[in-house]
Image 1 (cartoon, rainbow, N blue to C red):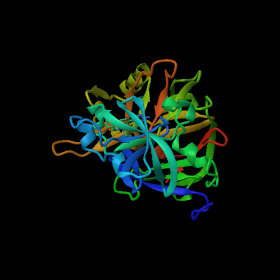
Image 2 (image 1 turned 120 degrees about the vertical axis):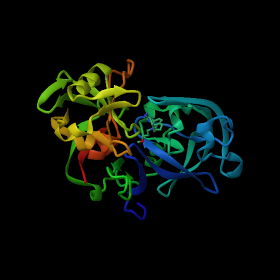
Image 3 (image 1 turned 135 degrees about the horizontal axis):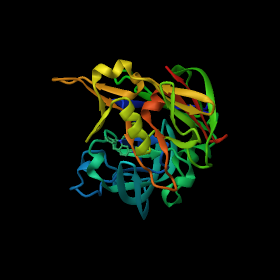
Amino acid sequence: PGPNNGTVPTPLTNYLDTQYFGEISIGSPPQMFNVVFDTGSANLWVPSQSCSPFSTACFTHNRYDSSQSHTHVENGTGFSINYASGTIRGFLSEDVVVVGGLPVVQVFAEATSLSAMPFIFAKFDGVLGMGYPSVAIDGITPVFDRIMSQHVLKEEVFSIYYSRDPKHSPGGELLLGGTDPNYYTGNFNYLETREMGKWEVTIKGVSLGAKMMFCEEGCTAVIDTGSSYITGPASSVSMLMETIGAQLDETGYKVNCETVKMLPSVTFLLGGQEYALTHEDYIIWQSQIEEDVCIVSFRDLDVPPPTGPVWILGANFIARYYTEFDRRNNRIGFATAV
Ligand SMILES: CCc1nc(N)nc(N)c1-c1ccc2c(c1)N(CCCOC)[C@H](c1ccccc1)CC2
């Protein structure tokens, strides 16, 4: 194990509690990129120098220039990936990728087209998928698997801290190889991943205040560091939002800021443990000139079968519950974040 006794930290930036990303380098000499470490996908991509100049989302971000890297290896296979919010197309290349000081030779995608919506809102350049190899496009070995095969990590786990205060420094931390006691209190509760090869767990109930609302018969939740919000089947989320008096407009659900203090907690029952989100956790309070706006960080999202129907527990859940992703034991651990 190296200088950090087998654990490797990467500080993250928190943009408005909705985007969290950290810096990696690709190529020799190193080209720097900000990426989201995303448990909802398993591929690495960054914008390409050869992306079309008309792709707004491309030229407003850092771009990888293979001609400037003497460790670049040509590949050229086509690539495309879809997220709940946006599509990327490009081609494969291979080069040295450095995460937290750890170098790996990695096959990744150079994105030549990024769907303008919503990548023009992305404060990050690319995405580093932390999902299982089974969900990797083109069967590419993911970065974390390449790092595990170097046997430099104390444990075959990684942990994510997302701060809840944009002024807090750091805005978050990815820790490879362990958990960081600076960012959680109490003990971890562990849940087996529902299906081998996905960061998914079983929800045994979703309640609003003391009232059980859904999922008593069990439903699936993806623990997704790449999503900003919590999403659920439209029928469930719209009922939840109606019950708290939230109005849906083009940018999502909003509540009258005067009612925020009285809003009930939304509780997810995972592995016999209750995970409550208070209004502090699920309302994004935006102070504006004329009047404050209170956005509810829940969204309708009907993911089609076979993946869906599914709840996605994103950044606002992870900000409340420090999360350990354990590849050795195929389980996810939650502890109360500081
Ligand atoms: C990280 C990749 C990814 N991975 C997974 N599994 N799910 C999704 N949804 C994404 C994804 C794709 C695109 C964008 C995104 C997220 N954004 C959210 C960052 C979340 O950072 C934690 C931002 C955004 C701003 C405005 C409205 C919607 C989205 C920029 C655009």
